Image 1 (spheres, rainbow, N blue to C red):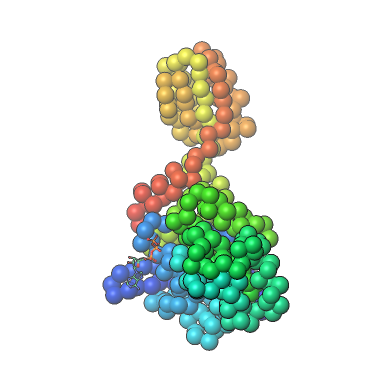
Image 2 (cartoon, helix red, strand yellow; image 1 turned 90 degrees about the vertical axis):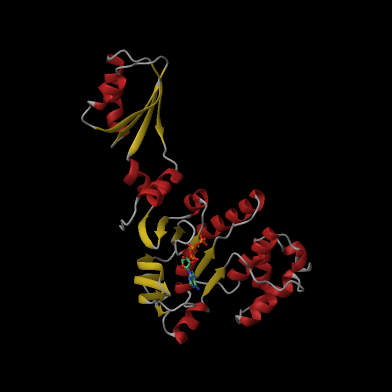
Amino acid sequence: MSVSFLIETSHLTKRFDGVTAVEDLSLHVKRGEVLALLGPNGAGKTTTIRLLLGLLAPTEGTVHVLGYDMRRRSQAEQARARVGVLTETPGLYETLSALENLRFFAALYNVRNAESAIETYLRLVELWDRRHERVGTFSKGMRQRLALARALLHEPDILFLDEPTSGLDPAATRRIRELLLDLKTQGRTILLTTHNLDEAERLADRIAVLRTRLLVIDTPEALRLRLYGRRVRIECSAPCPQALEIVQALPFVRHVAASSENTLLVQVESPEEQNPALIEALVQAGAKIRWVEEDRVSLEDVYLQLVGDTEEEAV
Ligand SMILES: Nc1ncnc2c1ncn2[C@@H]1O[C@H](COP(=O)(O)OP(=O)(O)OP(=O)(O)O)[C@@H](O)[C@H]1O
């Protein structure tokens, strides 16, 4: 079946006895896209994934995955056979070895050439050498890697990853992220939820910020630009008291702030075009400029501004 969007929701809403978990969510995810769903605790991220998997029925709105209507049980089952899921609690069989776990799931999913698929994915997640060991003896990071191998075993069209690195130590987190980056490079379609902004930025083509409603969805770079424009950091070797006023008066400057006695943060549309005039004005005013550089706003600033200040605003 050829569909233009692998994931498509329209006005999706879920209420639980008076609590609205997700409201009016319209999302479109193309093949090969990695979308990160961000939002504070209770924002509706897991509920969204469960709606997308057809494990919960929407109160209102529609949800299609791979063209299947996930509100219909038989269609949802067909879709689920073609998606891979990784949750925070991987649900592996503790008494079985890594290999036996994957054999079990391979049989469940009717994986063709199961032994070779199992080897491929156990090698990918670097557990091939540990394949005969019982999962009960595995660390949390190893379990998460094995669960990722399991999610990939049947060559799913989409991967749903619910907080894939939650609770892992930095080294285990890094290994999972590297694996996910590999999958992204292979052109997989992935929807992941995370609280980690760095992870979202490194992996995702677009970021959706959810707080019951969709606050914003865009590329990380566009989110920065949308909120902050581009900022130039100018550091002088001595205080220049009149600098702020002079910069403020320039017609192309959107905003200026002093981050210290000697440093200005200047928001402009296009630093490449406007820096020469900006620097010239400051030099004429007697500023002794030491450094001029682009100041990249962290995604965390963007995110906090969105979830902190945007009360009921939907985009
Ligand atoms: N089965 C349920 N019954 C009643 N309320 C529920 C149910 N599942 C979720 N909720 C409520 O829906 C809201 C959204 O929860 P959800 O778990 O989707 O948020 P989340 O963004 O995944 O949060 P977290 O980041 O903490 O995992 C919360 O207020 C939660 O209490």
